[in-house]
Length: 204
Length: 411
Image (tube, rainbow over all chains, first blue to last red; front, side):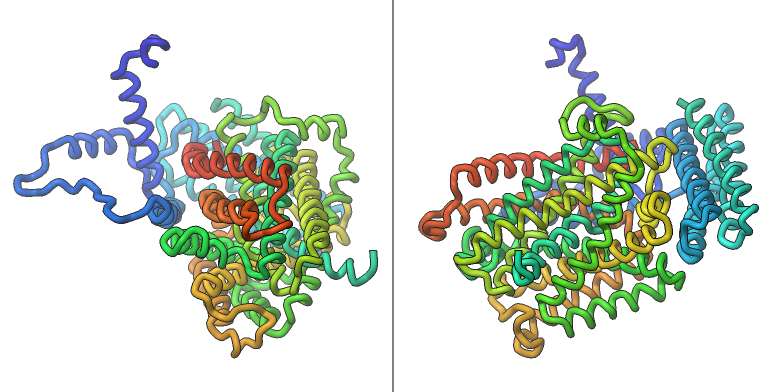
């Protein structure tokens, strides 16, 4: 296989290792950066202290289906744990995703504002849904403000944080706005969605 | 069709509205439409045919034997494999039930404006009282027919004037655009998973016994499975179309249960919004009941307890306690703060992993002439059953790696 594609076995082994490390890292509630991952790998490669016995798993009497069930339950528990994490440093991909997410929130808010102004919605739905969108925008704002990034990405992060704050405030106002204000908010949110989209495309 | 027949089909409509268009579909279908446009419509058709094939099969098995599927799983697979299937299905049922309970509270919040945390206990209490007070047939009818409010999405899809040529193209599997191949495959697995969830067949087969279907009802079983799930499939297709027309061009990636309702509101107005919210409330509430009952049915049938809504609660005390405990656990999961939409994504993917354990015993029993007599699987049922089992195994293997590699479909 390696020969067929002009690769060495070491390259394939390296890919495999990176894939497994990446998957393992994805399970963590707080993802480790590359340096921390490397340190951990070195620790693993060090010989175990004397006297410790090998802990290779023994499947014993367990059937395949029982192991599948255990894996299913454990996998879900680990994934729930992973879902609780957050923060950390933002790379290009994560920043681009944040921009897309902000675009989505702003565009959805703009659509809602348009419907509110046209009298197509109920007051309760408009208030509840705009509040949900506003909360998500404020979480995005907090994440963007707290996260670290590389100096080259810093201007984009700042731009996005300012945009997130604008979207958050606009959506918060939407719940109790007059018809004229609703139209203005709709236009502002539309503009914020376009700006977020532009940033996301520039990050590609 | 007489009124009696219309009411008789309620089991299929309830199973389809609650099972096919539950919170999982509302989330996955709108996300799929908003990401890939019409390109995943063919997956809904594949899923609909699959669930019709297996529901008809397990309905037939239950009608012939007058025993539900889980009873046969234990008999066929033995205690060890049966217990594994039970644990996996209970785990998936609980996750799904928690997601649906959260969905009920979210729908109530969108309708009333009351705080979410107050609506969780109120929603659970409402579901428990409904299950306690109403007979099985009335649960089917109330949730099945009020869930039909979701048909507003079909109206919305038509009113949004999609390019019907592009829609037709979406029914043909082929190359994709708009996202990576892995994300595309993740949505294929997700849509199939929501269509063919294991609790649907457990509930359906137990419902056949609850409704006292026998050999003479095999025709009704076929009609019910086809009409019910085809209706569910139509609603899923409508959700994908509205998301493709309304959300994709604006870059909206639905993250909330309120987002699909926005599509109904935008194209049909206030009445459309209310119909969508009420339809969603009853569809999600119906799915919560189905999952809690499916969990209780499986437990009772595995351990040989007396079971069924036809029994008085005191007469089938362990069965009654089981569904109450499932509701209580689901309540605790949702109260602990897990986002029901996120929980839904996990529950769908994990239910896919458990699918082979559910469907293999059904296929084996339905194919056993000694057991089924004249009602044994025909050539077509066997061919489709085998084909779909291969599909199920493939998606069960791919589900979790795809979820990890795509960061839950986010790319």
